Length: 136
Image (cartoon, rainbow, N blue to C red; front, side, top):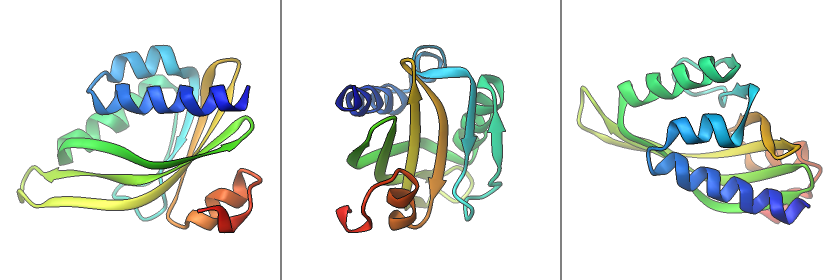
């Protein structure tokens, strides 16, 4: 089942980066999703429920044109999937391209992502998922 979770997360990221936010919210995320931004993100916080997560997506898109989360590697942690990647876009007011290395731990239960936790430290993300830090 866990390899299925990795593929499920991969497809969700493809949909997200393809601008299919509504599909991500309805087909991939549990309605009670809890999303925690990495601590250093602008406006970082915890967003609970589909409406709050959608508002966060909209907020990021307002700041960064073409906001995306590009996966570099996905790790199987059973019901947790660790995603190492880059997030960014082009600043709407500055026009400057921004990109930031991040790690996300996505918890999948009953075919839906129930939580997403962002980390700035990749080892911490692996440990959170019960994996060995030297994997990444």
